[in-house]
Amino acid sequence: MLHTRQAFAATLFAFAMSLIAAPAIADSYIHATATEQGYKVYPDHFRSEVSRAEVIAQASEAVTQGGSSRFADQRFPATYQASGSSLTRQEVIQQLLDETLSQRASRLRSLSE
Image 1 (tube, rainbow, N blue to C red):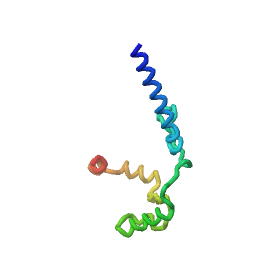
Image 2: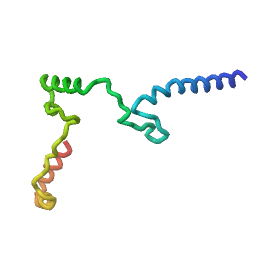
Image 3: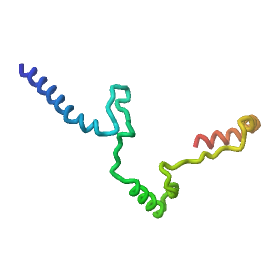
Image 4: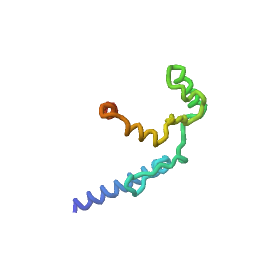
C-alpha cells in the first residue's frame, strides 16, 4: 500500500512539474516534438532582447578592436563570395589524369595533413 502511494505521489508530482514548465517552453522559439529530434525551431517566435542599433554598435566596436570587417557594411547576416575556379570540369579532370605519380602522392599527402 505504501509503495502504491509513493508511486502515485511521484506521478502526480511529475505531472504538476510538467504543467509548471509548459508555459515556459511555449514562450521559447524551440518547441518539443514527438519526433526523433525531440524539438522543432520556430525562428519567427524568437524575441531578441537587443535592438538592431545595439547589434550594429557592437559590430562596429568589434571592427575597431581588430575584429573582422565583414560587418562594416551593416548587412546582416554577412554574405560570402564563393571563389570559383576559372577551369572547366573537363580541364580539372585532364589535370588529374596528366599528373605524375610523385605529384599525385604529394597532393594526397597535403590533403591528409
